Length: 191
Ligand code: 5GP
Image (cartoon, rainbow, N blue to C red):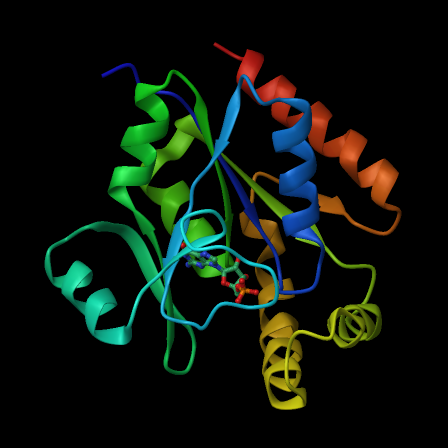
């Protein structure tokens, strides 16, 4: 199989990495395809099964762990699992494209560790914890408890930014989008 590259976007929840990943997919549809993760969390808002995530029960998720179907997985929040399926990377490489991931910081570093120079690990930095909290609140998709957990985790995750290949500050969205295009193109054009 022709192997492509991996573009990993990791960040604390609410940093805007999903928006940046969607932007890249819209401007580089011939080069990139999204790795649809599996999760045991319930569907949120307008999300669709098989598009945003593969939604599984905890039992189904654990069965896939047992069968070694994940490249990496994490219990990102207590009782809520997320994981990258091997089959996603294989499917996308088979189509001659590169895989782009929207995953948590631990998962991102795990993949970078496995794939080395084939992977570009990008950390998306929120302007501040305060702004991150405001963004999570205005999204109106998470409970106050869930937001509190995400903010607490974000504070720890910010400490890991230095372990990534590069970071992008998401203060002004247009600027961040352009910067993403630049780093991804540079990486993909590298032999
Ligand atoms: P959300 O519930 O907001 O969709 O995602 C929560 C966190 O889990 C986000 O940081 C998201 O990027 C991360 N996530 C999504 N898919 C995966 C995955 O396959 N593996 C890991 N480790 N984290 C993931």
